[in-house]
Length: 189
Image 1: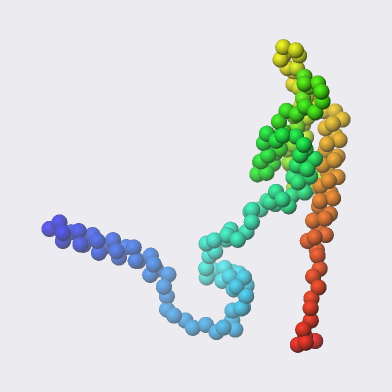
Image 2 (image 1 turned 45 degrees about the vertical axis):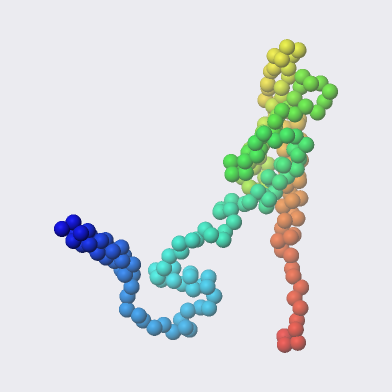
């Protein structure tokens, strides 16, 4: 009795698994090749417009999604170039932030700075960056005070980054619009 029920359940399960596969099948209708463009991209677009298919792997083959990759973002590259002498604590392109570690370049070991650069946009504009410079001053017994500095260093750094980003953006545009020389063969007119 158990084996009979098991075979019935097994057969029923197989039918249930095959049924969705057969659901999309229809009568074969031959098509004329001239109705479909030869380029795969145009064929896919036409099929999607007519509701004949879907794109399962739409994102495969695209790099990085909707945001620019870090090597092509001029502001990001310019910022890293301008603070490359400082040790980085955090550099998160997806989050749009660069934070340096405490840095001391003078002989006075009691003073150090830390820089935080937040990216608000990918465009090279003055309001696309939010820069904070923190100054740390320590007393003899390691009693430290940390102050957010809104002074000259902040504005100079922002200006230097924007200038470098503008240069990088200009060279990127020149490279992107590069014209290639074509070689004509004997068969070309």
